[in-house]
Length: 240
Image (cartoon, rainbow, N blue to C red; front, side, top):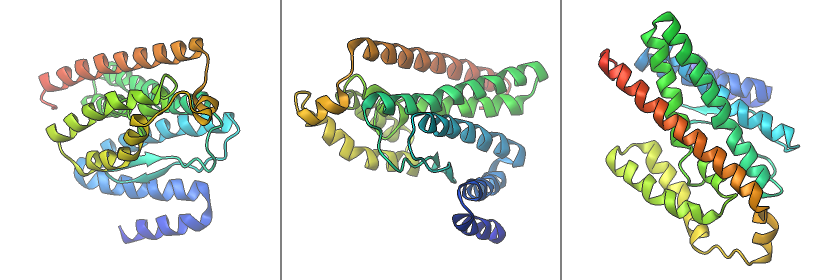
């Protein structure tokens, strides 16, 4: 473990690739002590695929972006070193993570069914669930950044959902999300669609709002069904 911490700190000097690799190794080591290295490796890889979706989309849009960074029990993220020029770019980058992450989780699910592997199915379930959770319509989650293209006031729908989840299954991660979302909730409460700065950033065509809204609902619905069905399947075979 001390060696992994050394790699993590050294990675800060080696650059993007080493930082990602070092923090991945740290997360892998921590998760492996709890769930075993095979599950930990699959879980971390699905996190990486999710974040690479964001990373590649951001690069495609010409944004300066940092490589994925991992923190055990918090997850992973990329750092945008410059803000998107408008809400459509923000929504595009946000959608790429759960979309690519869902494809990877479904591929893992199909491999698990083909190989009759409870391990792969459990990894797939974790990936599906995390992508579904990330689609809650509350910033700073991906769902909040996607639904902002409709209106930042959508976050006022996500706030009580996030609070209910936190009260039902309290955890440090959920509490952190609640804390980080507070400024965004206040922003949504005070949102003035007629303000010039809001028109400049959030002013997109109704057709664009409709397209992103439909894609968001389709992906969320698919993930909800898949997560539920796989949960029931794992519970039936003794893997809650």
